[in-house]
Image (cartoon, rainbow, N blue to C red; front, side, top):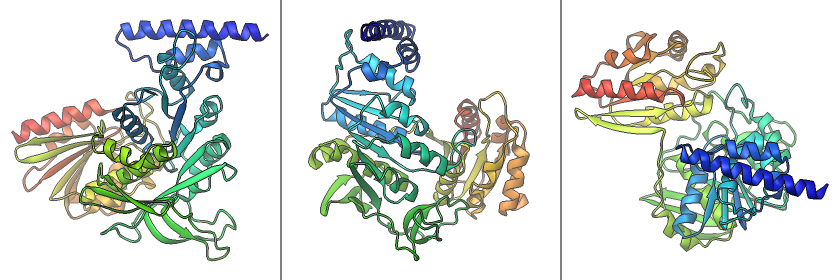
Length: 454
């Protein structure tokens, strides 16, 4: 039986490597199919394939792609050889494809480090056979209504799938994350202190963690950054947010000041946005726990450039056109709305978000609209909001309920016509907010706005 299993493994290895090579010759990325084929031929393929000596995995609702890519970039800049699924699937097939690509014909790893982004629901399938040294969990929010809308449900998947023998690097400001896998041999927490100018209690509709996980009493937020991110305590049983092992005490003037196990150090601030600060401290904590030195990380982060393929800024006619993806989920959309509201100058907004599975069709499910903070788009600095697409009337109704005056709202079925409905006078920036599947339409709109401004 053991001989049969070994034969199946090598057949899977060689066939899937051949498929990967063929796909790359055809100009494809080969990010999923080779791994899928390998696991079909040999179900224990991931277990049998030899792995890099050091492995770090990243999971969570938001920020896992950026965090994993920053970790990979930092390791490469420090001249380490890295295997990653940066351009592929974050399911077990994608991880298998990444490992296959950098494996020898005898199944040995050719790289010293492995960095893998892992889908929350797939954590058990991936981290069972792929033994990570460090696992970073960024945050947990309600997300896609189709797969993981309930963060408590996803927390259950993570709690069951996270390994006990890995170091867990957890967001200490997220009560859903900080309570994960208490049986793990080592858990460390990262946190961001209140920063200058932050409101003590933002106006978010959704707060997914309101009750004490120990006694179910109502929690008190000592500080709430957005949604349920912040510091809490229970007035009944004394439960409270964990003390931070990696605490950001300042993020200004291009520097991030971090207190690590009581010792203060400074790193280049890659981006000043609060979500970017969380990503950076997660990167630092994960790599420090993997054994890298503070001074080496600082040197690498000074050269890391975060490429945001969901944001593009176009200058035209003395104005800015900002094309920004705003995934149709409550928290992701709300964070984008908050950025728009806080942006400088007078603004106009075009949005044609949808909740469709693909670009071809839409669904009847619009519940997420009433969890997202459309009230942020009522800000006086936003002179006009134009909504388009199959759901334009639903969005118009939601904005009306949010309190947007009728004279500042326009809705139209064809999103490509929205560019012609914007009043360009007395506007500094036009934001075009689109969903992940309709980026091509966003670029058509951006080009039309550029023509009008020219």
